[in-house]
Amino acid sequence: MRPTRVDTQARHVVNHRSQKQTGVTLHRTGTVTAARRPLGKAPRLVALAASVLCLTVLAGILAAHAFAGGSDFYCDTCTLYPDGVPAVSQAHHSSFYEDTAAPEDTGYTNSYWMAVYFYSANQNRTMCYTEAFGKYGVETGSGCTTGPADTDARCHMTHQSGSVLAFCGAFYENQ
Amino acid sequence: MMPKFPRIMQRVLYVVAAVSVCVIAISAFHLVTRASATPDPLQGISAAENAPVLPSDAPALAQISDPSGMFGEIMTAVHQMPSLVAGHAAYITPTTHGGFCFTVVQLGAACDSSFSASSEPALFVDSDPDGSGPIGTTAFGVAEDGVDSITMTVNGKQVTVPVQENTFQYIGDAAVAPGSITNVSANFADGHSVPLN
Picture 1 (cartoon, each protein chain N blue to C red):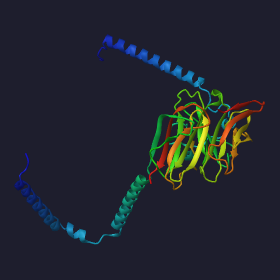
Picture 2 (tube, rainbow over the protein chains, first blue to last red; picture 1 turned 45 degrees about the horizontal axis):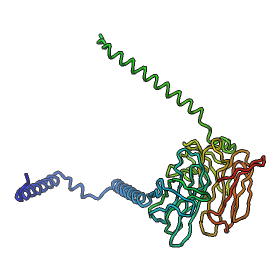
Picture 3 (cartoon, helix red, strand yellow; picture 1 turned 60 degrees about the vertical axis):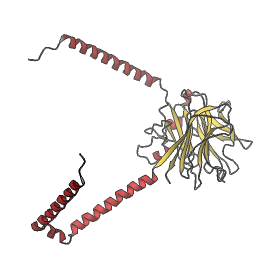
Picture 4 (tube, helix red, strand yellow; picture 1 turned 90 degrees about the vertical axis):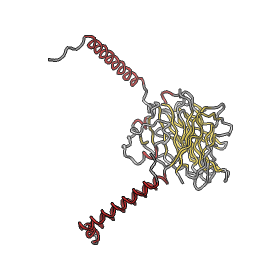
């Protein structure tokens, strides 16, 4: 049953009274007097340590949130051709740090020329590029970064005819 | 005194026990035969087979592991190659696919099946860390025992580089653009060549 307005007000009054009564009781027992005394050295240190710990944890959480990265699997069993038309990520980042491509050839019987790179449309240039001839795939190195440029991640087949079903994904840090 | 177990339950228990023993025996047999049938992923790469394995807390592991996990690198068995490749540390890692990944720090990585299970005797990679910028393309890779050089076409000119301790490298100048290295082949000591295409 919903309480009436009168009921609610009455409850507030009761609460207020009980707080008041509690305060009186505390004062009589001397607890308030003790709290008014200046803090000793030890409690201050404890308070300081607790504050520092709290701020450190907060900073850690914020940092982890700020630097947590993401991934963009921009080609999931897409077909790649060697004619210069790559698969392109939807996302643009200036913090891509790895691009990976692998043929979807579960038998691993054929080798493919595959390339991965970051491309800046604004600057009309490739920021870094890695290609390989192998069965399982290729990934960019740790020296392959986007610099300050806003780039997309790309993958394609190179130096051979035909096509290949592939899986490509890129990783970035949050900015 | 223990209550007498119903005869039907005893029979069920016997059957369950017999089936369990049978399943365990078949699994063990399967594991043993599979282990003996799986070739060593590093077979044919003597320099890697003899190379030290990185300890599990080696800082280099952070630069080798692939966040996508697509290649299944077995990070407890990372072999550091005896010599630098284009001035960078190089590592070979067996994979759960039965092959290996070859990583040159800074430049990149690629993965292949074991050479014993492949018709191609080399894994070839080329990398340009600044893309269209002034730094040229570096080609590198790992070749099977018996391959003594790699030949490639760079801007229309044929270039041959030696294979030493199963690795090779070619450092191009600024004119060597991304993707401009073509017609790669592996040359064996006996004179025959195998094209990578």
